Image (cartoon, rainbow, N blue to C red):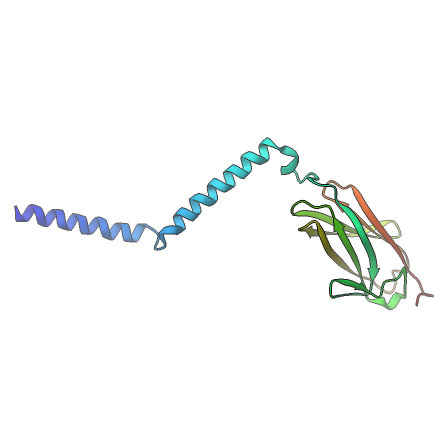
Length: 170
């Protein structure tokens, strides 16, 4: 009888040790992982059932409430706003105040020089009224007409700002 109990005891200890090795130290980590998978699966199902949301379609009507080309941004406001800049300006900012978001969305600042796109900068819009900006280096030889178009994820034009880099700029 004692021998049988010894074997049972050794077997239980072995199972306990194996469980300690195999199971995660943080027992809630496995639970969190399962919950995350469930959330991800339900979000995927929701996106399938509402395809316009999953493709980033406009859940709200974004609009540009304010746009400005400026030399700097201080305290979330544009500084040195103008429409004409000297070739030695170095870099400029496009500041925008976006309204109408009902959740996280993306807008793009498409910087154009003489009608040619130079760069398209994706910017996050996180709330109903959201200030955001992009910065573009301007080379001294890029004298001419510039434009920044603000577009939503579908490419819809929300607003634009025109400016000029001119040898006679201030």
